[in-house]
Length: 270
Image (tube, rainbow, N blue to C red; front, side, top):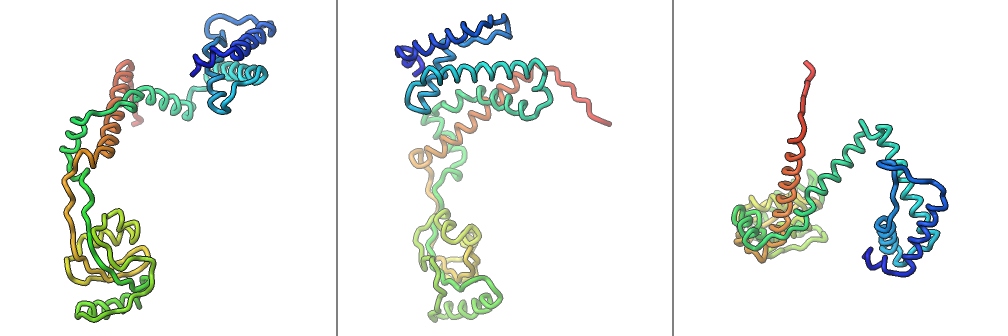
């Protein structure tokens, strides 16, 4: 993008204007670390960022302003380093660490695993990549959790087990669910209710079971075991896990390589 923009006549004019701006400033650059160079690459990057934000090329005045800001940034940054203002600053230390970590894992973040690598990952822990078990059940909502509701639950539970119909409290919840996944059930009834379903026997009314809305009487009519994971089904999750492992490995290896160049002395207080 930057190369394409630098071919534009207007960009050439802007860069030439920037050069004139610095020539007219009357300040000869120092050598070494105190020399601040504003060349085509620097200006091109500025123009590219500006174009990416505003979808147009900057005017000469806008380019001059960006150059002045760049020079000011460099001056302040270098003077701060010269004065040692970065020393002992946890924010600076952490930011520099994050930048180095980002450089270390850049390749791992964009790497793509092959099918064989993903299948091997799935085979090492098939339960992790298996589809959720499915549960079929029906429920009767008793209302908010209270001593009165719990006392009423015992009476209604006996009635249901004896084949007598009972009246449920109105609630924005389905009376029955068939082959519902754990995530679907949790989305409607909450995690506590979903976990309780796993321990209920089949075919018998049980309760009260608490949910995010209150108390329920529940009868589980069926459970389907999780299916064996396939590469097609688990590809995205396995890819995410593979990449996370690759990133962690790249980061650890880069750190150990850098650490090897240092002599670390730890003097603990006695």
